[in-house]
Length: 209
Image (cartoon, rainbow, N blue to C red; front, side, top):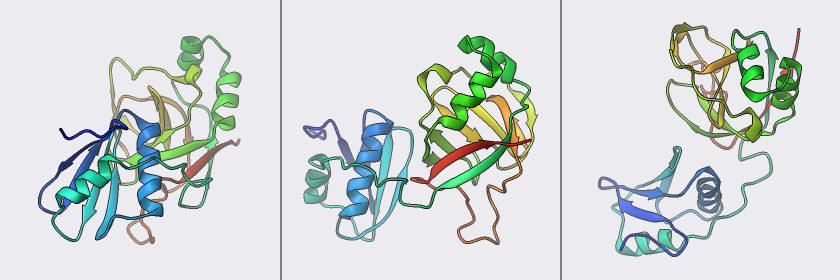
C-alpha cells in the first residue's frame, strides 16, 4: 500500500528522491506549501508537475519518509506564492483571439477582461526553459489546443490551452491558442534567477497598446 488517507501516493524515485502523485493542481499546491513550510529532513528541492511533486533529498529516502509524506496534510499556499508577483504587459492582438471568443461565446473584449482579471499562479515549469504553466484561468476561458499546431510561435506569445495560460519564452513550434504578446524576457541565463516565472509566482496580465 503506497497511498495515504489523503490520496497521496508516495514512491521512491531513484536513490535520493520521493515522487508524490496527487489528484490535481490544487492538492499539489497544498502539498508543496506544506513542504516549503516544514521541509522533510534532508530536503533540498521540490519539483512540481501537473499531478506529481518530486521531493529531492540529500540522502536515500526511508520508510519513515514515505509514511510521513503519505500522511502529509496540504497547507494553504502563501498569498501571492513564495516569489514576488509578476505583471506582464500584454498586447491582446493574437491570431486566435477571435476564435477563443467564438468558442467561449463572448466578445474578444470580454475574453481580455477575463484574462486581465484572473489571478494566475505558476503551477510548474516545462516545455522550454522559462515556460510556466499558469493556473487560475476562469473555467469559461478553458479552450482546447489547436487541432493543427503551428510550426513556429514567436517568443513572447501568450497562449491558452485547457486550464492553463502560458507565455512562449522563445520561438518554437506550438499548439496553444494565441491571444496576445508580451515583450517580457521569460528566460535569461545572465539573470539571477534566469527564469522570470518560477513555481508559486503570482502573475497578472495587463492589457497595453
